[in-house]
Length: 293
Image (cartoon, rainbow, N blue to C red; front, side, top):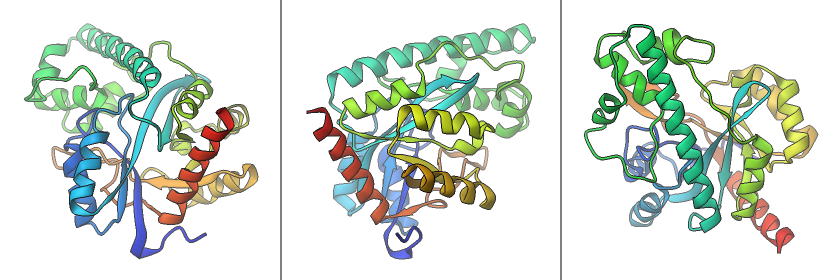
């Protein structure tokens, strides 16, 4: 399988303002075309609110859009993210489940604000919402980047990275995490909605024993090998794990847009896979549907 053919590149991990990205879904689609991609996936946190707009934009300009999501979970004392591809974005049970996850995310945000206030930082959740310059839809979600952006605007951090390094990253004084579902359950939700689950950016967890435990328990279709925060050694290590467990090696930039002149996590299209990988994910999703029927 050829992962890096220049003529058929897909970025399978991008975020829009339906969660914590800066661009509209349609803007991500247009940027994908400008950057020479043939396709992308919108994988917002705990919501599929941006997928329909992206699909329409893709049809209009000739870019393939893979319906996607990134579900927030917790395992082994760490926040674990699970990507899902080709899921039915109109599945009522999935939408109900995601609404509950966004409620947990909202409560987490409130706790972060409380902890920041206890540190003497003058910040409110309303200020974070006001920073959007638009109403927050019920099916959209706020994330830590929104809070970080407010910290920078109010002078409590010099840039987004500083806001995370000082306050919001795991283990820092403003970090908070409430009880969440586990990654194995999230993978089952994705399969039940007709999709193919993929373990996201395993290198960020700094615990490959936990990674293999999740793989053995959840049996995802794939693992995200190519990611903006993965180095060459990470890629080789997770390619070996993908081979060991028969997983599809996927990849994407985890693009969130530009804040204060900084791109998070990488520019759209800077990490990618070939169309063959996308086809394998589609077949895995179809196989899961047949297996559950």
